[in-house]
Length: 207
Image (cartoon, rainbow, N blue to C red; front, side):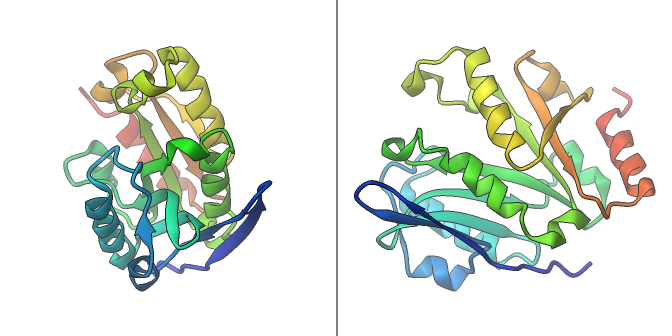
């Protein structure tokens, strides 16, 4: 499968500035930017920027960013599932996982997460993929937001819905570890029935 990447772009005008949402961006484009100091949920900002570059260099890797004055203030990643995850057992090229999404605190409330995911799905080539996102409550920023697990779940679900991802049942032990956890899925229009069935078998493997 050839992983075609067609760059999309959207301009958002705020009261005092304009920010740009775009992607998939290349590693070379990322090299010209800096990371907002607040994007540190997974690792220090500079290290996270290096991780984004590595993903962008993958054949299937897709990075979408929100940019302000040459600074990344938000991003989302798509790539094949980690080999240690059950989803890697799908063994075909047309499954991508939303690996990480992060927006700097001062820009939260502008629906940039939803915009990133929505923009990522505009590319018609995304209709060839099954897109998944595994939502675990222990990854959520409950301390800073002071939201309950269920309120945060509603926000995450609404954000994923912007890109057409919907909750799907599974017997994955990590998903089943807490009722707020969920598997979100978008199945492209061009995905064959046989691939849908293959994916369903992974969703409900024998325990």
